[in-house]
Amino acid sequence: MRTLRARLWFGTALGMGGVLAAFAVALYFAVSAALWSEFDEALVGRLRSLASLVEQDGDQVEFEAEEYALPEYEPSPHAEYYQFRRDDGRALGSSPSLGDDDLPTIDGHLAIPGFRFGALPDGRPGRLAGARFTARQERQDSDEHRDHKEHQGHDGQEDSGKQVAVGTVTVMLTVGRETAGVDRTLAWLRLLLVAGSACAMAASAGVLSWLVRRGLRPLDAVAGEIASIEAADLSGRVRAGEVPGELVPVVERLNDLLARLETAFAREKSFTADVAHELRTPLAGVRTTLEVALSRERDAGEYREAMGRSLAISREMQHMVDNLLELARADAGQLEVEQEPVDLVSLLRESWERFADQAAERGLDVTWQLPDACPVTSDGAKLRHVINNIFENAVTHADEAGRVTIALATPSAGGRVAIRVENSGSHIDEADAERVFERFWRGDAARSAKGVGRRCGLGLPLCRKLMTLLGGTISVTTSAGGTFAVTIALRSP
Image (cartoon, rainbow, N blue to C red; front, side):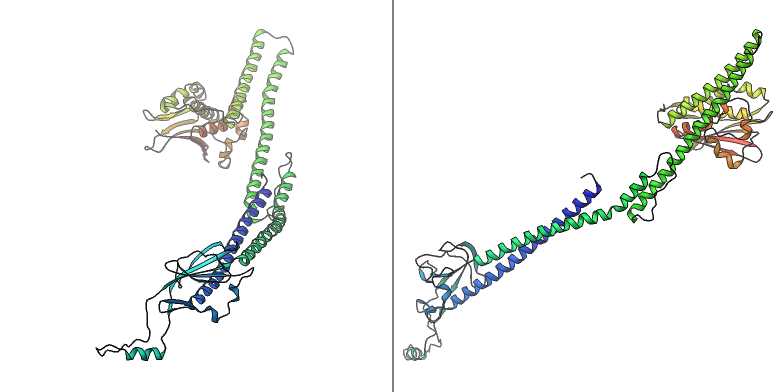
């Protein structure tokens, strides 16, 4: 049941089976109710016909069956039964088929008789109906009326009635009839419904299997197209023109995923090539410096100078490798954030101390626009790393005797604290401003700068990763006047 084909087939078959079974059961009960209703109507007709033959003559109750032919009540394998009783239980008469047996008394009346299933006297399954009624009074003839008129009372009053009623007699009548015919019909109906339902289910299962296979062919086609896309070439896409409408969103999302994978793989290939290129340059510098130093005998000072240049290059290489490792950890989600109270004003001034001498050597005009204090809750170490990188870029890329502006804006509660660092001497076009966050991307002016690791195009990408981790943002702007500004924003406490 793990495949979509099996689930569709089983679910549809189960649903159709349930509907078919419910229909069969409903049909059976509807036909059964109709048959029993027709049977009961016939039984009531017999009950009322027999009741109409009961007549009261004085205090006697007579049954006029002798005047009519009632063959269904004669002894036979399919005989029917009836029996009359007074309300005190005394038998008044019964069908010849009943013999010495008795039928049970069933409460009811001729308008709404009572019914009961039970065994007939000969053991056959049957259905009984019963009712209580008042025997019909016999009408007096004209001679008796005249005799009664001659003997009227001395008070001169005349008997105006045309019937003489000694007293009404309540009669209880029970009729019985076998139900074998209805039982056979219902048994045949049950067999027909079960067999028909089974055949219908078998036919439906075959049709469903064909329909499911045919309906899922687009999935097989999509799977085939996906299988044809190789890891070495992710430029292929799944065609959405021939798939059903329900699969179009899936195909579109899949194509988007392939596009992102292609971009990611291309970026990784470029990243590997850039790492190899960036490492080759400092390694070549170290090798060249050592080969020149060893090409002839030199004094200790020259050897010391060569070793010093090699040490500086190796430190820059180590810094680049450290940045690469930090970026890899950030991509893998292995960096943890430790929230702590941080005063941004103190953090900015302490971080600047590392670059104050370099700024003075280059004759930079540094302008501070800071409040007295600005407390936030953040990871101080990671925030210091971001600020150090921004300061380093500002001091390194500012033009000689240029300017650097460090500003901190504190908005109202619920807003964001913004740190803005500007420097003059930018040679990056406004259209390329956002590309500074791409790994190993550097503008032409930056590539001509001295040094390797600290200006290899990893600092700002790492800063963006860290700011995202801290719940903040980082952005850059550049103007036609040669100003480059980096802004980081943090949530205010």
